[in-house]
Image (cartoon, rainbow, N blue to C red; front, side, top):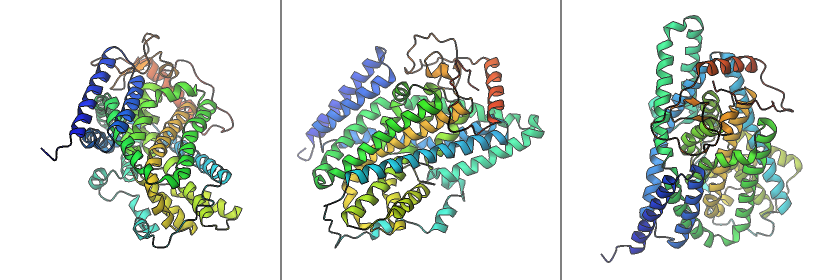
Length: 506
């Protein structure tokens, strides 16, 4: 009994009471986004109040992350299969695939330029007088793999092993081979593979229903995860006061990129209200912030895109998974660039404009194949510093604040992926404005209801057991619209396709 942590028990009891409060708010009709925001605020208070005594609360967040991560690999397989098989042609696949990669890389390129401008304008690192003597960076350089091994690792070698290790690129490539094979066979003998398509569609419905159950628990998980993150962050800040300037610039860059940059992109190229857009994607943003895992947040990201934003299943199921390995503006753009400029200024290295151009190009290349898991920013930063000839020992000194900055950078990653998917859907004619505006809803299994009362809350959880029916005429109309629109893709990038009112999805 003497070793019993009574404060930890008190923290657990307080968490249970807060859970009850969230449950009662939900029973009173509180919207999902409001519940998530309330959980965020309550989690911060809990983390500050019981700092260092949240061992039992950590268990709750860990269980949620483990469960939702378990769905990632099978969800990617089902989503990509359903997306590609529903497209109906290789031309549409090429168009959406190239468009997805373009917009994901563009968001990263913008984030690199943004960070470079902020870092140079603030002179971050000047006068830091870093002392690298005795600092061992071999542990970080050991994380890097030779280029040939990196390329080989991108391709699937054992699909069971890829699934168990969440090797996203390997999973996507394997699934694409199967999906493309289906398209080739269906083009000549559709009736022979109709059963395969029906199986894929049925599996997708079942998986999204299961994911819906997990998503309903997100506010409770956010509370526990934010409490743990806050407690850890406060402890690390106390030991990293001298590096607080780097942390501030990193957080500013992440939030400016997530909200200002993506807001402009959503407004200009998707024709949507950015304020409503950000309100609807709040749950995946906060989940990414607390879990520091773009991959772990993927099920929630896809569900939010289809049910709240109005992105078609085909685009959301294809672009969002790619966004966990390509692009990643926070982990592969902002943090490596900031660390590089900090190193240059702190060590008094003479850097020319050409050197900064090389830094931008290398940062963009490193963003290809980045894994959306906690700790990725350290690996990408190590790769960039090594490539441009800067000492990786600087990263060792920045480790105390890297995890804190990782919360915001992961949120920026997920926001960029959602933005890219939304723009791709708009330009492919696969964005349903009725869902975005709250005039139609999509149930957990993907069915669409155009007869929903316009006054219904657009971001409230779907009632259990409610299954809406999608009119077949609407589906046929959308298929025809995508057929004609995608044939001319990619659309000019200097103008946005005008918003279309009340589209029926797929």
